Length: 126
Image 1 (cartoon, rainbow, N blue to C red):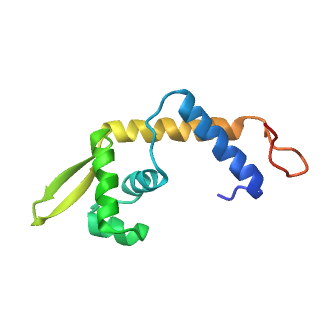
Image 2: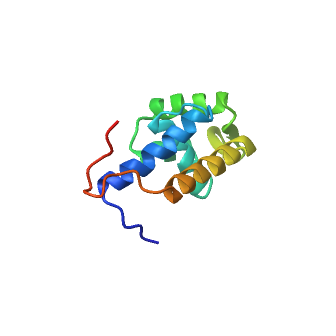
């Protein structure tokens, strides 16, 4: 499934989706937190701090901080691995699933809006 967008159109799409997210008062996630959340939801489990750290190429302490924030928001939860009590699994939650489904809808809606970028390919003026 390819989408034919130039860089300005892609940025315009992302901008419209983010603005919509801000307007509905969705949780304010950093790029790292969003990348981690999407990794947990779009890739099959199990998910560990070590695995997420390797996948995202981010330190384990940075992953832990992102998980802490997402846990506070109820978007992921920690569970002790029954097979290795030293390992903690990062699991999906209903709240996280709902958030990502709604965010996905924002992106789809932004994509369905008439392109705000200038036909010349230049970004819109504000």
